[in-house]
Length: 337
Image (tube, rainbow, N blue to C red; front, side):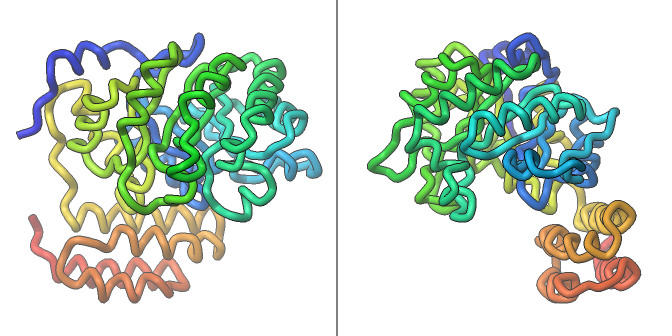
């Protein structure tokens, strides 16, 4: 049985303070490109009403050259607290983009300095900024000067195992005015492979006075608690653990606040959520939403008899009716409880 230590309970009992902005939860939903749109965030929010959500990352250069804001910046007025994440390597474009993010309703502005994808890093954004700390510092200073909301940073521990520079890098971000830093405890070269090196999060926490959020390998309540115990972090950010499982942030938050584990959803409950997700993406984005839903649906279809066959069907679904019918047939084959 999982227990919450008195020390951890006391440490996490107060709201998370990001500058002068308070969040009544120590569990955050990570920004995920192609995932954390308005539809997904609404599902996560249902189970985690107090948690900070993040949009998909937004290209600041792209914002500079368009008159109409991209849909990924759309915020529901009722979904606070919410942060818009930006990426780029140009301080002036990021400052301009941050002002647009605040105008849209962002409670904080987050700068992506951790994305490992080549198309981002080759242009100087994401985790490549770990190799350009002067530019990263200039970005934070420019954005802090441009907006009145707290500015935060999400990054990794270094470029490779031989280039782990997170301690110096994080201190520069704090000195530049960042009010919180989220550390994905992997290097850029690891991508999403191997094990997260949580010990580096503890070391970052020891040298900073701003909140440090732990990220990497948070796939369960148990993992979240172990990470918080081992790192001393001020909170945890759930990322890939929420793919096909929008319940995770709420489960961790509930346990931190009550010391009680929520009953995990049954395969049928998860599949009913998958249908809702599909319908909502169709209503929000039309045919492109159905195409986008394919990956989500396959993530939901795991951990029960017939799941592999269902994934094969959902990976090529073309209509809402087709997807829902396939899921309903799978549900009929499952026990009711």
